[in-house]
Image (tube, rainbow, N blue to C red; front, side, top):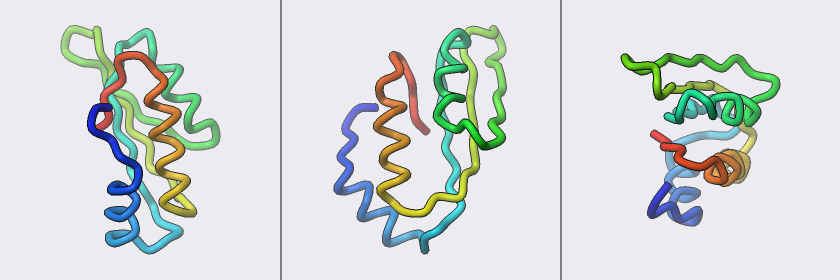
Amino acid sequence: MQNFTSENFKEKLESSLNFPALYMFKFIVEDKKQDEVKKLFPRHEVKSKASSKGKYVSITAQVMMPSSDAIIEIYLEAAKIEGIIAL
């Protein structure tokens, strides 16, 4: 997740959302790492879709988030997963 600065992202989130707000997280990871991403959303439905060759999986979770800080915290945890791409 290159060029991620939480300050700029926080400003964008707060100017475009009224919290609490429903927020959609989307990630792409290698198939073998999808469980690591799903653990970021333990109490929420997570949808996954395999790529055409099955090597990668896109993962989507819609979550009611209490604040921009809570959203940023999820992205910071996700950044610890090797090779993850946030959309």
